[in-house]
Length: 369
View (cartoon, one colour):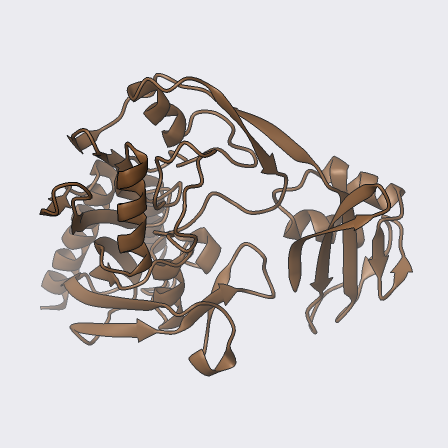
């Protein structure tokens, strides 16, 4: 898949975004328009068709039409005239679950489903819009490039800077379908000092996750660079530290409770990389429950019986997202120097899932006895 994403170059007066894909060795024959639509999910089909009509799509160095059939190991390049979306950041009256607030910082318990900041496909209804309303910040504008990046990062602080149109509020993110704690800076000094703590990995961050499989060890550590998956631009994968690919990442985990076919774990982040917990747990064979991107949205452990399949389907319906919650957050207050520690309870959907699996595990134990 894409080896080079969002590579912007200028040709004459025109700027282009360049994308490059290499189809798999086992790739089945499929029309090029359908292939690109499947692998560029944040790009509209009409825009892909426009690129094909304008002869901006090439396979193995030759221009192709929509009916070209992609074959194994084809090298596909596609160019888009570069676009920028002027995103108006406006305050919106969206309810916030504020855990703590003073003159410098604000702690919010983000619900699952709420995007943190505006981006491609999410220009309104975000946490940032809600924060602007709460803090009485007037509307402003910011330019955002059209790309296939999603609003997704377990607890990303890779950049060490704000992603909020220079408002200086955000110092880290959690993804749209993860619930839990976020710290927000209310002034420049707070943002700088908090960002420094994230940069030096001194922030204490603990998540609760439900993963597939029975983790035998009570605790462990996953160490491995995290970089983009060359076979799927929306996924990340683990690379060896010797490879020089990706960024150094460390996740510590501890088993909280075992339910037989799934396990509840606490994950402590030593670093903050995009999708870190999801990637690391998948790497050790325990993808997050109902994590569609990393294969957790299908039955990976258990029986073949219809009754069990129905039970798991009901669990998926109960928690229609990856089972991940940012439960605790600890840091040094940017003004007072005081150590601060916050913890929020599990959201109702995740607690209901745990209760359901706990009951199932108890019944299964009684049946075996």
